[in-house]
Image (cartoon, rainbow, N blue to C red; front, side):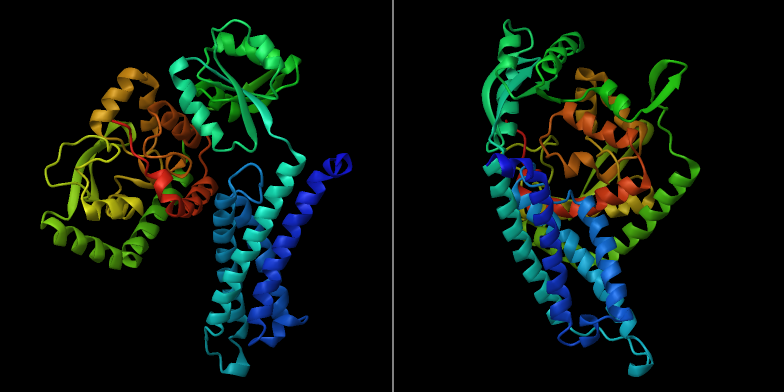
Length: 445
């Protein structure tokens, strides 16, 4: 076993390589039944191979890669399946283009669609097999880490424990403690990993120093200063080291590209999803005959107020407040619309009008903005960028993510803004549809 542990990374990389190779072989062999030229050395096969390799690498990295042991197997399978399906479509389009030649009269033909769909199904099975195999191997050679949770507020311990216990095969929680407790050094010595959540800075500095001394893995829930540090660059003045974190401002070119992208994608999105608009409207009308749309004042960049448009998912004239578990204000049609995020589609109109962007901090209800800001003054920093339909808080978080954690997720986006990151978040948003129950989990009463 010690020999295997020594080469565990190489074995995991080999599993990943053979998984991708198997997925590529499935696509080429099945499409090759009606397109024999791609099974040999030809311009078509070379172009398809390059497309599959390059786009597959980019999309797989965008969706998190083959990180067995770190993410749940179901999430890895969903992410890699979406990445490779998108890769398959792009590779198939190369085949269609290469087949549009003089021999077929320059006709564009979308042939072998059945084999393409079959290849995608085979690939999903290959991904599932290699993911579970890789996961089993990871935990066979990596015993669960003895874990200590340290929080600034004792009331947060159960929430943090519940979040970490989702990965119980990787972490065994031996102890939880408050940052002010005595005897923390002994607890740290007995742990492999230590999680710190909302621990006061002075105490955190002291405790992380102890972790460093005893070579313990450290997980720190970031604060605003940590986000600035993470986005900073090394800079030296003679022998003085600094981290420089420049004030985050979008350039004119970034604003222009982001706005053009918002206009084009929201316009196409409205056209493509128009059947869903009709189905949702019919379902709402059929249930209670009330209004189809719900409008509410929300805050966007600079605190400017606009009226957001959503499909109505609650009873007509219901009290306006955040959703709670088993909320009787939600209609039957509304539960279905919320589950699959269809209620959010009308916000494409807000994006087209310029009130919102595709990616950015979610626009909170005015009531929530006032309450959150009173409790957490830094919450207003989210208004440094235009409100968005999706963002880190939607891809990584849930409906009931705490205001503090929403703020941290949104500031991570704002401080690390780039057009490439916007594209990555848009692509990752597809995975939210496959974990509807987790992402739409409501607040407790």
